[in-house]
Length: 163
Image (cartoon, rainbow, N blue to C red; front, side):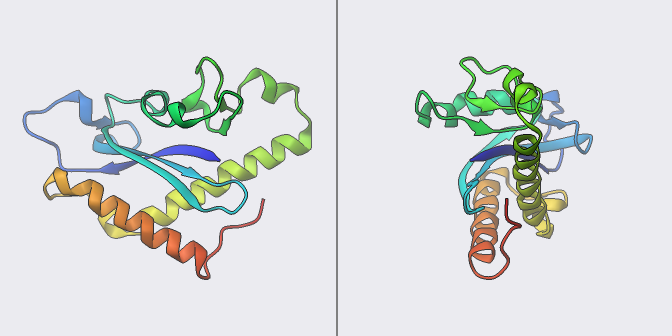
């Protein structure tokens, strides 16, 4: 599977705290981790929310998904997941990535691009692309509802591109 996080803007909580800050849109936000099956392109994992400023990608991975992987399993990830030991995340800048062939690198790029397409489809829902101004306790329910709708769209006629 491929994994990545996506940040969703929220109204700045009071009192101000840097723990909410997302560099992606320079404001307060919540971060979710999403995993997509490489074989079918289905959304197979969602984890979050986490305050953007307090949890980088690798910390979120170490908090949950890493514990579900077998010893020899690996996930495709971007450079935000670099530095995991033992190396459960295969990142573009990793040592083994530099030694593999051109075709394998192209496939890995397509896997990550397809994952970005999933993230974009999720953000097509206005409630996740605009500043969320409601009670944060309900945000995870909203996010998961959007995930279900996105997955149903993928399964029923809006497939992702083939790897």
